[in-house]
Image (tube, rainbow, N blue to C red; front, side, top):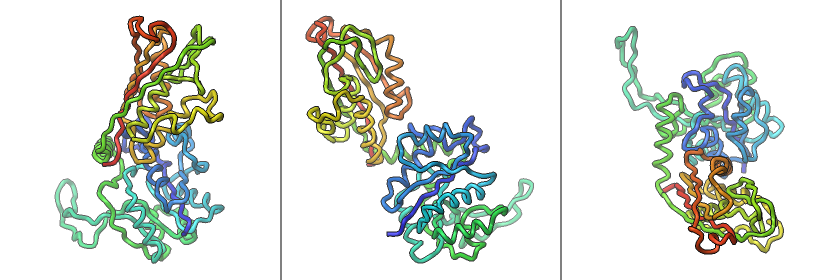
Length: 384
């Protein structure tokens, strides 16, 4: 199979959007726009790698957007989109892929079938672009008045990805340096390369305005129509020590919690809740307590694993709720830090994470101060 690298162009500053940061880093359904775009290509079986072209001034935003992903070092963009793409192509020369897909970071709703079709077109053509035929009547205008009707037959609206055989598009971009061509297909056309038209979907629109971002969020929600709720419960007894770990936060206490890992009952219960929503077993089936590699492990590893299983199925975690049950230590002073830590581990907004605590009015083992319990609920949205 031919090697194929996706080059994501994310070096723009999004002036038309009017936000304080580039639109590719804005939140879309709990993740940055860029994260959705990158994930679409990472999940595709025919894409061997993903490389992103960025504006180095926003490196911190880029790092946060792709945290946890195994990506090559990003490429610094140029003064124009054409310069940025050429920089990206030059950075791929060492890899020398057979094919390259060039895609706008601000098109996060690209679907697998369109990617497939663009790649397939490169079997018979040196270049191919995803496009949508023009359906509306087109008018020319001047000074607020219609001056004529444009024949729409044969007209298409170009999208991305635009796919190319790598050596040909690299040579074409080098030869077009300094010109202001509107897209990479235009660069290929100038070089005399035949460009195949691949019918795409309206949903693969470019996020340009705040209304577009809202439209993209609605589209993602409608696609994730399988809404599931899972529950989890965990208990750990006290042992000699000087602190407990609850929801990823170290809390000073007269005892520690006894367990094979760090015994974080909050994260254990929440991990089970997410696994339950996926019908994917429980924490013990993924991280057996008999396995010595998990001795003393940070329970954030378990929770991240559960979240990654959701992402691998094309879903997202919509909301989580953890209740810690104990007499001591007091959770209230640490609740904000716990909420923030859980949100950080799951990569979701803080306002979708709830952490709270209660007692059993001194009844039962928690009432007697023998240990701590936790229960959790997780709402997960999966493709319908």
